[in-house]
Image (cartoon, rainbow, N blue to C red):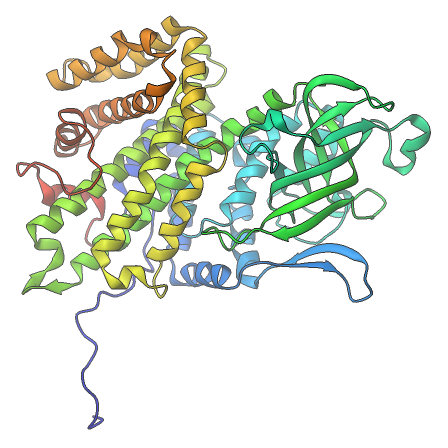
Amino acid sequence: MDAYATHEVENQAPPFTDVNLYACDPALQEALLREGGGWAAPQLEALGARLGSSEVQELARLANLHGPTLASHDRAGRRIDELEFHPAWHALMTMLVGAGAHAAPWSDPRPGAQVARAAQYLLVGQAENGVQCPLTMTYAAVPALRRAPALAATWLPKLLARDYDPRPLPVAQKRGALVGMGMTEKQGGSDVRANTTRATPLLPGQAGAAGEGAWRIVGHKWFYSVPQADAHLVLARCEQAGGDRAAEGLSCFLVPRFLDDGRCNAVRVQRLKDKLGNRSNASSEVEFCGALGWMIGAPGRGIPTILEMGSHTRLDCVLGSAGIMRAALCHALHHARGRMAFGRPLADQPLMRNVLADLALESEAATAFALRLARCFDEGNDPAQALLGRILTAAGKYWICKRGPGFGAEAMEVMGGNGYVEDGPLARLYRELPVNSIWEGSGNIMCLDLLRACARSPDAARAVLAAELAPAAALDARFDAHAATLLDGLAGRVGDESGARLLAEQIVVALQAALLLVHAPPFVGQAFLRSRIERPVGGAYGRLPAEVDFGAILARALPMS
């Protein structure tokens, strides 16, 4: 031994790697079966093993350490706007596109397909979140593209293919394709009606190689997600060739990165965003310098068209947050089990057990809610399920995503300095959590959407929520009182914008409580009821009553092998 060595490394928990992320999650397995996706269990078990491997954890680390870079021009001065990614990014994308995380419900539309894909996506969120952005937008673009059959004939086969092809080529020459989105502009942000980007139709003599139906687009986007994607859905105002507006509203356009003749479309990437998190993924600012695009949907109806895409991306925000929360819980609980403090394992100390059990309840409730929401998308042809989906998407996007940053901070605190430094995954996971609240509609936007969904027919909204809460009726008087107060006062609250956040919270917590009371073990359902229904949800974790069975909750959260 080195005479000058001061210590040996001891009392350090090993990394949480080489774990099957699906097999160690009973709550996810049960929700998958309950919501109609049980047929996908073998594929999810295989994916869970892959995503939990040390190899994939290292790919995630490298993809974030070596983020994308922009080359605006080549060595001869030609404008190319190409992005360079670390090989780890491409390896992750190859794996996940190959697994169908970008399109499986559309390429294999069987009952439970949305639920199965939701479970898959929740697992992906535990590995690397940057890759979720291109996967989400490609998945969400398919329903919108189906509104334009001529475009769909060219693009959908490429989007549905399970072949990741990052080559910068026209879509006809590619094995597979990805789609991004461009909505927000610097002067408007979430208020897309303030957008100024304009589109002018090309006259027959001007179209040339562009072909019939092309529009010339001039303007900018302040956030242009995944600029390396093969096309983007973009909002712009229509104008006649003479300059008069053809429609007061915004229209939706498909703007390809490359034109059929091989030329780059005139979309100029000004810079990549320097973001808090999601650092492996590229987000950009762009200028449209006469870019060519093709309309999707009716003129002036761009917002409803792209909001169909938005409903699916918002589902993925819920799933993404639930996945990160699950990952943070697992790392924190694994650490606490492997760390001694004050003479005994950290996980055996009463106050730490309270904190960890409280985190476990939050994570399981988020998982149960997310997969129930996904079933609404599977059953969207049922008007009641479609309405429930609109309500729960808005409320869930607000509440689940809002709970994420505090959850991540608490999990990081469990690990202390080991969680705060960049050597482990907790710091990266923590930085990922805020984006799901901000992207695709911030908290206030979601709560206003919730009010609009309920206000269209307060009686119908009350009926679908009542039906959803009914299975838990009479199981506990405290739950019954909460549900009655929520339902009886719903109609009177749909016009109260200032109280919309509280309404969204109460809807989500009520549904979570119902799901856990009916389907989870009693020690889970009762603990959730006592900490989220019997008394208001607190800002910190570790407030569970002493009578809660901490040991049973933690054993369920991450079974010991």
